[in-house]
Structure formats: structure tokens, C-alpha cells
Picture (cartoon, rainbow, N blue to C red):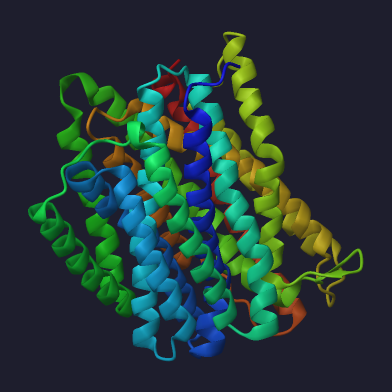
Length: 469
């Protein structure tokens, strides 16, 4: 495949940026449930609910980030601003000793993701729009970008547990601070290297004032939402309604079909992520209490199990991108809805593997680590079948001048799924002896499998209407 001019520089700078953003995010997400329970003495149910709220706000913030980028300062500049928030949030969480400081730090991190993640993806989409790339080239590029994202996740998941286990909770947050500073340097250098691909925007006092007012007001709102569970639930509903309003106004006559297709994918995305994000809540708690951490002479720390999923993305990402290209070149492209369906089916297999592992393990013994490792590697294939394709899909179908906002809506679906994940996880109580922990998790897994089957059936039902080539 011929390399597009400028593609290497664009993918290098953006992938390094997302490496840092994902490092910071996964350091927090992999430790947050334990941080809340062990340092702040919150009950398991309350901790699970708050983790779900953080998951939701991290992604819902993309709507604000998308608006700021589209209407005020552009994609690339928004990402630079987001890294400033990431640096501040990491520093605050490292020193947090009260719940108020905890919420302030989490608010900064949530907003940083909203400013970085959707806008960096949109920046890549804009690059491909101006180069006349084929769908296969675009999908291949987003898969390479997604590998960069998961390299950051892998590093964080592997390192965070070790730093926390050895030096305490502050150490992994300080490591996030260092990585964030390096990302800022990367973006500043990239600004000069990629200047011809960055949208020209005249920055004046009015633009600065509007951006500041929006971010300060939104920061206060996120802080309040994190602190009040009831308000958090209302905020999710408001965000969903807001997304529907944006989609309605953006449709116009010739874009109605695109908007309806994207709406179907968004609904499927919410269900998928509500199940996927159990790895940060119920499954992570199960690993800490119901899984034998010894594997081939290696004592795997709890959060390090998640690194196998990130490693799987790194291992399989390139090859899956090549598979999409292969069928594209053969004139038999795999439709996006079929990729989504494959994601649901492989996610069901993930839960089934863990369930089998529980059932094949003696009743009073911890489940062997091997089952969890295999499950996470399969989960990587599931994620690649849906997430990277979702990013690419937005840039292909979103109405003109709404790409970043639609990228924000895509991330909002992850946020709604995250909040739903927190609610679903409360059906699984991980407490008591090994037998009780395994029994509760086994029942929860059956629920998860049933929901993934429903998702797969929905894909089959709507396939004829929404497939496009």
C-alpha cells in the first residue's frame, strides 16, 4: 500500500499524544476502585457507582472538547490545552488527601480526555479527508493509531500496579505527571512539523474569554456531578438528550440516512461498553479476590492482568487492519455492522472463558490465571473489531462541520456505557470467601453473556438496513 504524504508524521505525533493520554487515564482507571475502597474507605457499591460516573464523565467531556475545537480553537490546539489539564489532574491526585481534592483531580482528568481524545481522532480524520484516502487506507491508519493508544494503556497497566504496590498510590500518579509533560513537549514540536495540516484559526481575546468561561463552568459542573450520585444520573440523561438534539440539527435533508445509521451504531456502542468496562469494576475486583496470580513463576499484580488485553491489541491490531485491507482490495469489504457483530460475539466468548474457568476450578480454590489471560487476549480482538472501526466510521458518515461533535457523541456513548457498567456491576457482589466470590462472579458472567447475545441479535436484525459499501 502506498504511503500517503505526511501520514507518517501525522500518525507518529498523534499516536504519541494518545499514548500519553491513555497512560494517564489507565493509571487512574486501573487503580480507582481500590483507591476509593482502600484510601477513602468507601463501600464497594458506592465505589463502583463512582467509577461508573468517572467513566461517563471522562467520555462525555468529549462533547465540550468537540465544541471548543469546532467553534473556537481547532482540534490540535484543543489537544494541547487538554494536556495542560492532564498535568494538573495527575498532580492533584498524587497529593489528594480529602474527597474534595479527589473530585477536583478527577474533574481535571475528565476534561483533559474530552479535549484530547476526540480532537486528536478528528485531526487524523481531517488529514485523510484532504488526501483523498480510500476507506481501506483510512481504516488501516486508524488501526495503527489505535495501536499507539493501547501501547500507552499497556505501559500504564503494567507499571501502575508495581508502583502502587511498591511505593503507594502517589507514585503511579506522579508517573502520569511525567508522561503528561513529555506529551506536551511532543505536541509543541508537532505543531511546527504538522503546521500545514492544522486548521488556521485567529486566536484573539474573545476566543480566549469564551474558551475560559466554557471550561470553568464545565469544570464546576463535573465537580458537582462527581460529588452527587443523583445529579450524576440526571447528567447522563441530559447528555443523551443533547446528543439526540445535535444529531437532529445536523442531519439536514441529504444526511438523514447517515444520521440514522450512526444512531444505530451509537446504541450498540452503549451496550458494548457497558459490558466491556466490567474489566475496571466487577472483573477487576474478582481478579483481586478470586484469581490465582501465579503464572509460570510470575506473580501477576491485579491491574497487570489488564495489560494482557492491551498487549493483545498491540499484537493483533496490525494484522486486523491488514485483514480489512485484504477484503477491501478483493472488492469484498466487510461491512461495519458485521465488524460490530463480531465484536459482540467475541466479547461473549470472553465471558464464557472466565465462566468455564470458574466452573472447572475446585470450589474452594482460586481460578487459574491462565483463563483470565486467554480471556483478555480474546477481548483485545473484540475491542479491535469495534472501537477503532467506530472512530473511522464517524469520519466517514458525520455531516460536514460536525465531525468533531460526532466524535464527541461517539465518546459519549462510551460514557453512558461506563455509567451503565457501574450500575450493572452492582449486581455482582465480590465479597466473602473464595467460594462466594466465584459463585457471585459466575452468575454475573451469565448476565453479561445474555446481554452480549442481545447485542449480536440486534446487529443481525438491523444489518440489511444499515450496511453500506
